[in-house]
Length: 330
Ligand SMILES: [Zn+2]
Image (cartoon, rainbow, N blue to C red; front, side, top):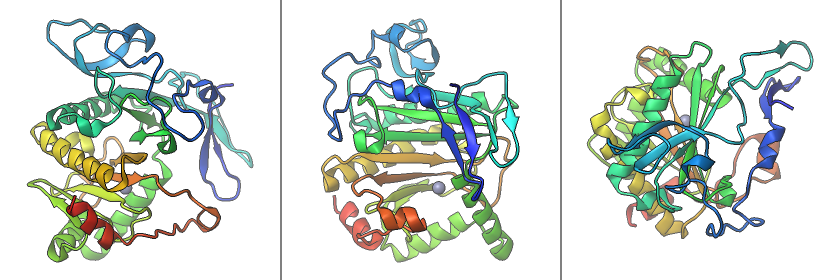
């Protein structure tokens, strides 16, 4: 069965039904992550096992799909959605449509490494450059509207392979969470004529109690209403709504602050599973004055319980102020 978007008849919330994903290989036994002892498809020299690369940052004298790369992007072998030309949709009580889109994997380094944080800031900058390049490519496809960039680290973070990698899912619709943020940012702007992200940075730098790190162009902080213990967000100081519009010469600095955030998290929580997500405006959003791209980062150290599923309201047992202090000190 091909994957499909289905809409809940009561809430309108969308899900993707993707039975093919169940065939994925698993590096993890039960809930416990283990080091990959078997075949690593992402290793340099194993290029033929992943399918052809769609992008790579590689040595000038090397050829595609051979050794000599630093960051390599391939199509996901077990995609949640696919770029089928035959898009069907059915309206009504059980509204559904073809799972149309692109699902790619960004392999972050050619050698076996589980932790992005152990790569140099410049190398992490190259990973971020690969993100930008993919966004620039996909926005040329008129059928695609929005990209979700994310990293799953560890079994409890949702990863099925432990070689450092991140993923990109590009869809023809804006995802629900980004839609909420876009709407909230617009409403704030209409009321105050200022970007809520700019106001957050200004207020947080003023009080400093939730700031973890501050650099020339980016701020790392624990959000006021953090859902998860030790949740962090990186916000650019410049008003830029799309991640791909960030100047390329700032990516090593962003790589440095992302590396620092991950190192702090790994020190304080002893190498926890985590996710980070890049929230960016939909393609062709022309210089929105209200929404700003950002990277949300959260460890997966607590399970979502019944009340959270029931209410949508997450109980966080570590205050962001205490978390920020601990992260700053490490
Ligand atoms: Zn966000």
